[in-house]
Amino acid sequence: MHLSAVLQLFLQLAGKSGGRMMAFPVKWSLCNKGRRQSPVNLEPQRLLFDPNLRQLHIDKHRISGLIANTGHSVIFTAGNDTVANYDGMQTPVTDGMTNRLKAKTKKKKKNCYIFFIGPAFWGLINPEWSLCNKGRRQSPVNLEPQRLLFDPNLRQLHIDKHRISGLIANTGHSVIFTAGNDTVANYDGMQTPVNITGGPFSYRYRFHEIHIHYGLHDQFGSEHSVDGYTFPAEIQIFGYNSQLYNNFSDALNRAQGIVGVSILLQVLGDLSNAELRMLTDQLERIRYGGDEAFVKRLSIRGLLPDTDHYMTYDGSTTAPACHETVTWVVLNKPIYITKQQLYALRRLMQGSPDHPKAPLGNNYRPPQPLLHRPIRTNIDFKTPKVNGKSACPTMYREVYYKATSWKQH
Ligand SMILES: *[C@@H]1O[C@H](CO)[C@@H](O)[C@H](O)[C@H]1NC(C)=O
Ligand SMILES: *[C@@H]1O[C@H](CO)[C@@H](O)[C@H](O)[C@H]1NC(C)=O
Ligand SMILES: *[C@@H]1O[C@H](CO)[C@@H](O)[C@H](O)[C@H]1NC(C)=O
Ligand SMILES: *[C@@H]1O[C@H](CO)[C@@H](O)[C@H](O)[C@H]1NC(C)=O
Image 1 (tube, rainbow, N blue to C red):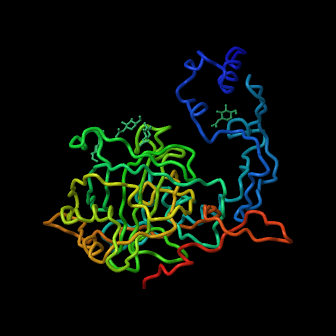
Image 2: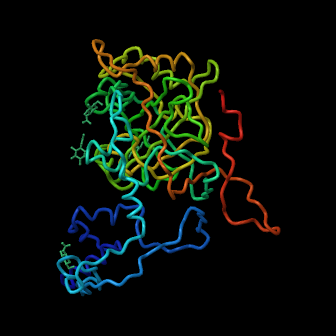
Image 3: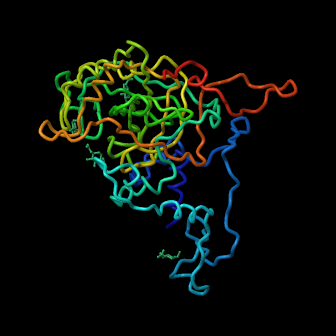
């Protein structure tokens, strides 16, 4: 590379390139469009104390390698099998986690009599699903109140309130509402997309679909749990990063690709969320796997409970291929579903009328280990005073779910 090329690169990075911008490869578009770029200025007043963070470990043994002047930079590269022959084989420098990971993923394979292959075996069936077993940032998780960190940088979650039409389907694995696209939604003409912004997000996301997870009995059903408590059902609202990616499937395995907004459902007498009723009213028409029905003018925002408080963590999709690209937001209050609505859900079958197979319910993945991930929240609390001065940001130990009488059983 020559000086002119390097100069162009720096001009580009500095945002001063003007007409030259077009000359750069499309695959560098993140340098311009990205909203989570490095380096940054580390502002002391922005620091958050996270007690989950561990000591950084880098192996101390010596290795050989090559130092090079690349024309852009000075780079030392660890010798590999080709280069480092002078020393023979080298032990890689790791963060000390590799061996533990190997030990954990070596799981016994057992025959199970189940209707479809259960979550514990996903990664063993299809190599492309290996994240389901090997991943260390998987979802769902149990939200432990004592792990919550208050983060004052978190903003209010915003979801557009206008109504959209789409299709609700029984896929044989799940109940999914998908926003109508140009092909499907012609009845309404072109639809304005529903944007999901604010919250912990750096980007604007576009609503794509809703999944419903539920149990065949009230004790189980939700994927996320709070302090070990699972709810009878959970609604998950998914959107994709429309500033970086073209569509949902493209964003699924890309950085910052997906958001999942989780709403936990609780039974409380005859109370029901009105928008939820628009979905459950169609269940009779999607009794069997492969059935779909039209849902007209649903407000996604209308599904949200009446709270600004949420918890957020980085995780994955809860079905294969378990991509670890999902920023989860779990709202800190349930919405309500009636016993009749739950009954209608529990009547859904996986198969066709001829071979209905098993009920669709219990379509939840069990909680995955949090390991060292933080769960951040915008739930502020009275900062405790220490010697008359307010203490540094610390953990919040009470959640709405704990503080009120949400337990119905
Ligand atoms: C080994 O390192 C050299 C120099 O860094 C590099 O050119 C080569 O591609 C590497 N080979 C492999 C197999 O990674
Ligand atoms: C439109 O939505 C339907 C039903 O969800 C889907 O089958 C189809 O692939 C979508 N078309 C495009 C262009 O995304
Ligand atoms: C959602 O975002 C798109 C840009 O992707 C914008 O054109 C549209 O106006 C936004 N919708 C609303 C309701 O603000
Ligand atoms: C999604 O976007 C990718 C990349 O632009 C494209 O290859 C693919 O065909 C798109 N898929 C759909 C369903 O539109």
